[in-house]
Length: 376
Image: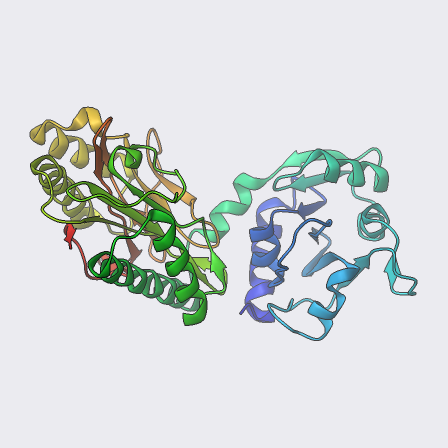
């Protein structure tokens, strides 16, 4: 849970980066509202935002719908640390303004350049109604780096989330051993167990796929009965205090095909090569180079997506990006998901993701165990 000390530190860090660029910042993405204020709601269908003014850097303003008043004031769940809250809605109460535009107008007086993280057209309409002549400036590129280096508490949340995810993989193995099951049955069971075990949500829908469907990494779990001797991929991302796991494992009902074993062996060699290099100061091109070398040796380079992984935190894909033409440099406290996925059209592939915190001298593995094909 975000406390006032850490909340002010984050707000002041943003102001330090942007105080000569914009007069205020408006965050409307749920993860950034949470990052700066500690507030989450279960439904973002009504206008919710955070305003951070450069001339009032100590405490952000939370703008929320009046339907969430009790959630905020009774501190039911994920309460904001900031005391500056403006509510909007149809309620007839002195402390509630009628529209999001009216709420924004209270806090954007004198703002000529407004930084935004991401904004929908409907939200832009509210801003224009509040401050018609304001200039909109994209500032997401200045916000994302603030989230890259995690504190000890954030890493602990990520460790707990990934522990829940690893328990889910064990559950999936037991389900496969017990009786015939479908992709959907596994996904539903894993979700339920994670919530009952302490997860407060999911960073992404639980992905369960077998066979050639694996080659579409973001395909949903379907009511397809899992067949033997084919790769089965499970990607699972329960969240703890909003911080997401990212565990991916490959299972097989019965003897795995020879080609799957070859893909596994090439992947694990590539992942090992990456992990040996990870430390503060290492740049992404160095990591890309070792993966390319390994996959060329195994003759699977054409099946690699030219990607190694990504940062992990309040969303499943944070910076740094570890792939493509990224020039990012690793730093102590970053948490990264390492998954140089190899897939073969018409067959599937070997999918595996481990999560590491970058330490002073190397890595701290947050997803220990179950590294090879999990044969059932």
